[in-house]
Image (cartoon, rainbow, N blue to C red; front, side, top):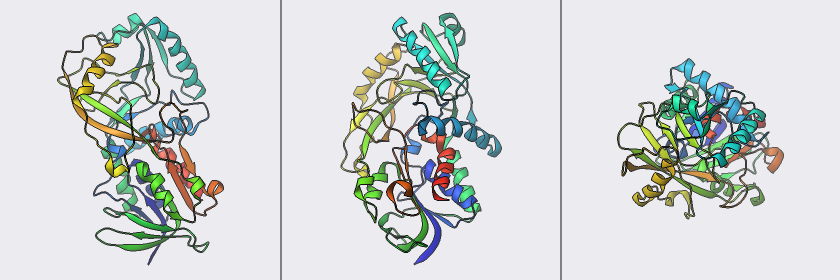
Length: 374
């Protein structure tokens, strides 16, 4: 049995950030990933947006960690040459009835510490984006885009340069957290090189798999394991270049931010995600295919703010699935960073429901995990 200071389960962007932070503290850290590469789940199936922290409830973990993580992330990218762009976002009202929503959103953003939103009238919107049809909009200059894979590679590099190790194709078979106080966690790890690991600290950052991993921890009461919920978001790509330089978002809708237009770093436009609640038997059974028939609903949604969208110009691109803690129609829940103060298991942190803005907040989430362990 190999003994280490810390084990992190899940090599998505949050797991990588946590493992890096532990290694920077001088801990011998092992990052376990069941897949054959880093970031193949939720971390690589999103809009790659650096969020400002506008919408989330005041005082929530999503609000605080997004605002804190955003500036950390911009600084990290600048220091390490990770490609990103602070391109800005327009949050648009396409009818007079939605204008009041913009004022409410601006007030909410200010309560979250986002004080740079600018309210634009129709003429100002048209001057910025002539193809956009809006009666008013909020400009968020702090919103940006990022090469998420380059970010994850940088986090992996720092983990390894500080003595940490990444083990791919290493599924966790069992976890016994009933051990001695100085070494409470013993993991049986499968894969090509099965091993037994013992660690003082254990972080479950398995994303879609996190509730399932936690359910298998001997010593953790089942009452502390939430039921996994899944919301699939489909994306469509535009055939040709879009006439926009900003990200374009409609007023938010239930369970998501609506069918928005985002740009990648090459300037290619994509639309999504929509919200499709799914009930797979397990994350391994998720069908990530995008149904081409959904294009019609996408076109209708996009034409509310871009009436000039060419017909039949949207093509299925990819989909992602958000790890939710609530079901359709239920109140949206916050990130859950669950430490020993909640569940009573020493040296264990479970991360549940880390959906958007998890990418933006990743470095701040890692700091929060450290505070729960140290």
